[in-house]
Image (cartoon, rainbow, N blue to C red; front, side):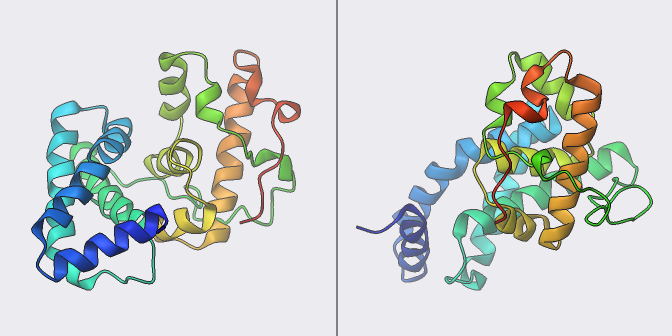
Length: 204
């Protein structure tokens, strides 16, 4: 039996060979996850619908360029992320804070607490939708995406780095800093942010 990811790659191959239904299967599979991911970044339902449609249009136009040796899910989430960020930049008319920080520094060498990286589903532990929104609202769009991709959608740090178009170490260190900041500001209200409540992340 093919793995889910191999099914995706097989569907791409079948579509390129002339099977139009293969594309329908891919759209059906990723429609809801992509919409939810985009909406959590934009908080705008109408815009999210438009961005999802644009994501699938870009996917369709570039399927012949897809590298079958890579994961389709990583590829299409990268398209969705880029399209959502383009919308956010136009709406806000400001530059994003980078994963590395406002000053461009890399935090990989400055944060030593490995327990800042969590292997359990942090977002699933949050006790209300409003608290989840509050946590995410404190982060840059890039770090919102990283947290969602890791904790909600189950991508590894290596895969997230591919989606974000950044080095793995930069993504890892930015994530550490984000968790440290959330702990500092919200651990009293949300005890699941405390270091002792969640084991350290693996080093993928």
